[in-house]
Amino acid sequence: MKKIVLLALTGGIIISALVGGIMLSYTKEEPIKDYLVLSGTIDNFKRRDIKLEGFDFEKKILFDKKAKTFLDTIRLNRDGYYKIVVNKRRFDIFLTKTEDLKITLDYKNPDAITFEGVNGVTGKYFLDKKEIFAEEVITLRELLTKEETDFLTILNGYKESLSKLLTNSQLPEAFIKKETKNIEYEYLRNLYYYPSYYPALSGDEEYSPSGNFPSVSDKINFNEGEDYQDFTFYQNIVKDEIQRLADEKSTEDTDIALNYLETVHTEVSDSIVKNNLLFDQAQKGITYTDNLEGYYRKYMAFSSNKAQKDRMTEIYNSLKLTAKGMPCPKFENYENIEGGTTSMDDLLSSGKYLYIDVWATWCSFCKRETPLLKRLELQYHDENIEFVSISVDNINAKSKWKETIEQKEMGGVQLFADKSFGSDFIKKFAIKGLPRFILVDPEGNIISPNAPRPSDGPKLTKMFEEIGISI
Image (tube, helix red, strand yellow):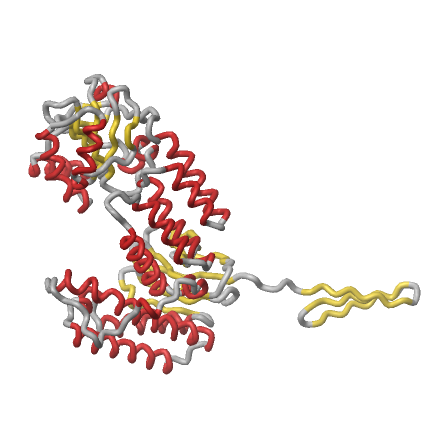
């Protein structure tokens, strides 16, 4: 006769069977938890989702508007700093890979947010930290307008207050270790910003740091990959320092986008920092470079991140379709300032070169170009070139578009794109920033997908002269 005995033990199940006088045992281990559950309640919130953001991480979490709740299983690659994004409100949190967190929030009263779970105490710490900042610093802009002595006094006091808060908040040791670094990097970031921001914000253009002002550049190593992932303040300094070094190497004829890639490659060896800097800039930089092929080749040689290289290949293949010498994409029936419609074929029927300005009323850099573009249009009015401005304002801003054109007395052909940045014409040029200028020949072929701006002066007039247009 066969006798079967079942034994259940905590932490697993052991099944023992007596078969033919031989005892056989089978152990089934419970699965190890490799996720956290993020849940919560939000009152007075009408959107369909919220977001969780971190370094190289973003996830949308569905929000049940009827129940006013959200719940999702999150798998993270690393413990660290994250943000819960609830429409326009952002809340700092610290997450570990397996510790659940519950959040309760009233969207109309964000200061009343509460956290439950092992990492709930860190959420409370971030709220207290925010209060200290508001009391002692007010805003970063306010801090950077202070005279040097006052700036250093406030900054040192703020740092000391944060250190006391961290010590007295009974936080997990692992978090304290990271946050101690974070406080130091925030301190260094503010020091780093001061010499460049204070003259502009205060109006004291003659200011230069005193001999007692702490140096930051010599304290920053570009190759701290862990810190780059963890601390936004460290990222801020590294990005600005790399940009400063790239600017120092630039000359009037430098391809600025390509120069930045080469600077990163020369100055940074850590793969995390290097790949992030390259990719962060390249998504826009490749749309501005004068040498698409060369830019793409160098990016592919410098980066070691396969997913990012694959994405850049997609962008490159798209941009090849609007490279120099390619037929310019067409658009149909864009509304013009007179109330009618204009298509690309209408413009080409004139047999003129087209200098196209893509702009928006909210773009401050566009506003700087406006008077110079207006002057150019007057200077070249009788030449074989048409000046065309295409607004990518939102449809709700159409009245503002009309008012701006009237107030600024803008000339040339004024058009309103059909779907703002979603317009096919805009997407085919992969336009990421404004203003953008495009030069097209009378046959509809692209001379330059990223032509010089009016403010580039001689560089633009030289391009016009090369195609036989001069004044």
